[in-house]
Amino acid sequence: MNKRYGFYFESDRCIKCFSCEIACKQWHGIKAGTIKLRKVIEVTTGTFPEVSRKFYSLTCRHCAKAPCAAACPSGAISRRIEDGIVVVDGSKCIGCRSCFDACPFGIPQFDEDGTMRKCDMCLDRVAMGQKPVCVATCPTEALKWGTLEELSDFAARKSARAYTREEKL
Image 1: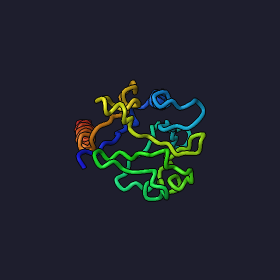
Image 2: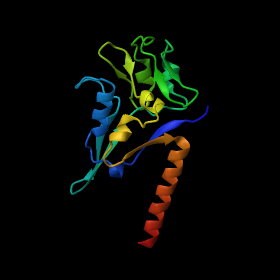
Image 3: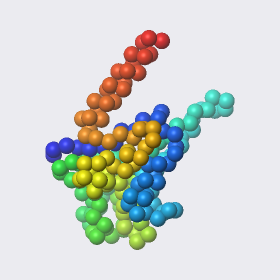
């Protein structure tokens, strides 16, 4: 495999504007009120008066050993060798929902016709040298996209900066 791509999400930057969700739906021509290939959720922790809210933008993790692909009896789900992106061939999907049961994150969605859909990292945009639409439209840059090596380096630098700030306090 040449490269493996992924997403990095910074929850402290997310303002729950839904730009990523809306841009994804528009780019992929998904009708309002139906499936979400990327969704923003809110997680509230603590008890009153010490309550904390965080927002998370969720989508397919493009797992190295994708359980959804292993569970698919029709071979509709596969992982691309060249970049690690897990894709769905809708013409092969039989709508059995085995992929949903196998996914530990509950990511697979089923379109009105019963076939599975999920994030494909906007392969058409990536082929043109562009970022996935969810990343490109995030106003706070809470979403990042790149090779796993690039994202790992970014996370390490971010962690080092946070550690240095804490030391100064």
